Length: 471
Image (cartoon, rainbow, N blue to C red; front, side):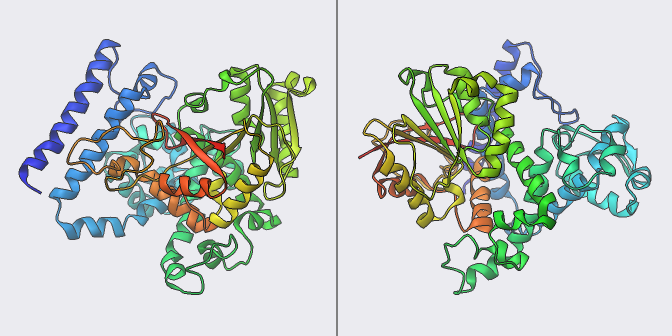
């Protein structure tokens, strides 16, 4: 890479900062400090979530990471990547050890590791080592030797509970009634990290390398069980992990803008009385957002017996009249069995296909296709894994093309899109499934007689909406 390429990357960074600065100046706002807590309710955070600002942020992240990779000695970069697993477990230690709440209560002056240790009964020297690795990655601040304070990044891991309360709570209890971002981070650095450690052996073993089965995964090898992840969660002794998982899935919604479901597919344009079938829809939290915005629609929420029992409570609390009027119906259904709704205007699949390998995903799609009318639409909401090279895929599909990326950035935007690739590895680890490239999704859908007619890439979200029709 010539020096001119380094300057080009630097110009992308400064140009994108100019975009952010102009917008904030026009709004009489200042950019949030890394030393202060994150508050998603402020006006400045709303501004930073705007499409133009999200784009500028992504360009800065991509260019800064590529610039670092270009100028750093290769061995240093490789070693940094190989040893980054320590960062993951330190984040979990800070969550499960209640560092976040203890440090937050100390305020901006911070708290000494000896005082943290007195509150959570752990070794102060080891606390310092954990927090120092985190602060070196901008999670927490070391305000003086062995004295630590919260900052913008550490604050998103905060349950918001009093430290004295959370220290004494169990793995699952600590996350109940919270934003659940910490639950998501803890799960990823617990089950996820343990699975990740065993994945090379699983991949290189010809007995497991080619498996597409949900109970022959890296998770199975790591936890020495023949049960799939969800069946393992159902065991009584694993109930705390199941509770944390459910809360983690709620917390994962924070990764996308609020009401992102309304930003692509035009729900309000569906005819009066159209039926939306939320397949594997959980308690129906996504359908609730659509129902509030599109009062002309009816809904069927489908999931397991246990989940549907919770859905009754959810809708009674949030929109009871929808149940009473029959506008919303709750239905126990296994999406591997024949679909019972034959007049659906839309089948909605959010974060379903990525849980299943291709043979199982085909069963789901084929079942829906057999029950679809010629007017039925299928809306798949999943993360699309970008190619890291220039690829002419789906050029004729409206919305498929991504915004052009300035040279010399990776077409995938590199570090700015790292979550898509990391989530893909997580799906492999847990389920032998995957997040798919756009070409893979199109091939999978068309193989089940669903034609992709529109892609909605949602600004600021890792998820896209793939709209299909029968053929």
